[in-house]
Length: 613
Image (cartoon, rainbow, N blue to C red; front, side, top):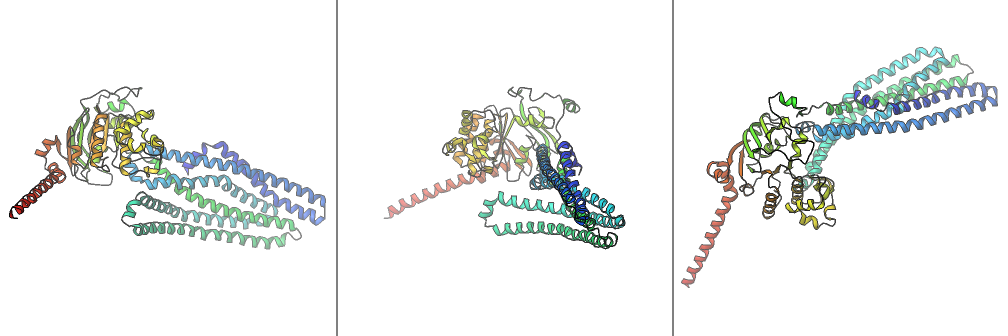
């Protein structure tokens, strides 16, 4: 609730304006039964048409004032709630951007999406309802009770009993409803997660004809959400009618009492019944808005979890924090972003680095120590799951090492602001990531100021210009979400072009040519070699032919570095590297030799056959 109040305070003016006109509307509703009683008891009973006309005009004016109040209240309530909803979503999105991969892994993307959308909508609806109903309901209820007591003081004990019973029922409703609505939001997380997983992997699902399996998973998640919703609605189904029963019983008792005390005063009786109906309506509104409050509080708590999430990676605030560790810090950048960085002997240094993903006991990287010289190309190879991607993810500080030290340009990455660090690094991930928009917009992520010639040069280097030029709108071709209208190889080439356009000091290619054929891959790597002159390149690949021409090669197995050096050195000293070589190239050479021997044998057999003939 504190979270919602903090946002309401930012719009106090509009909120109070809505409340002011809400008050006008409420008093208009409360005054009408009183003047109706005057018309009946004074005008109709006394057959005085002037009084009937006068009170009728007054009632008409009151109704008009109430209508104006309702219209203005709705306008301000809607505007305020929409603005607050927008601000909460923006703040959540901004907060998520500050979180590290570890935080996002823990919160889970599907849950974050639910909180940004559904949870904020629940909070927004409650804030809107507060200005439209929540404040009106208690004022109407209290005002109606007071006016009933003024009409018939003997009803005071009855009204107190009704209010106490209704209050207890409403409290019980909230007490029982909160955990159920919280559970329902979590089940909604599960449904979103299942839907997101299916839609992102729909091709694989169809390829393996696993529609029935995915349907069962979705059915299970949907069933769990429905069960949670039924449980929540059951609370409302029980407590709502009980409140109605209490108030209607009060109306019956009131009619019995007023029948003895107000003989001949039909107008006052009508007013009391009308006010009692308003009490019933108000209590119903209070019950409904409190149900909304329960949902909003559950949603608010889930949103607050994101705001309370402490980034796993702490950003250095100033040089004094660095100097506490006894490190002589030289800023990577000055005010000029175009100023070249001071060169160091080694661009990247790992010193006894170990790293494990959150929630796992098995280290992804174990005691890694190596260095990459400035302008050097380092090939990284190893079996699947050996820790190659985990290793290079530590360079741009996507994750922090559990122990050891990672240095980039001579500076500890944990002492370097992420924006500065990532400004000098370009990453092409294993899975090509493109965004909704034009191809040109996607490529200019590398350099927002790049002109079309620079874009084309980068695309040519990545062997992407050829297929882009054949598209109807060339670089202005619109891409669907994730580049869905391109093939895997096309997306990889555009991702490489985007990274080259950035002209980084360090270029990380994380197995980003896996969808390319051997000839295209060779052309791309050759062009990258030309374009990346002076860059430090980390080249991760499953193919030994891709990395064997690198300046040096790092071979990994089970998270450990099992070999580091040139191709010739690793062939001589690293068993894992030799095994990879034999499996990919050695067997191929052997097969070629066997084939050549077979052909030779066939030829010899033919000659012998000819002689025999």
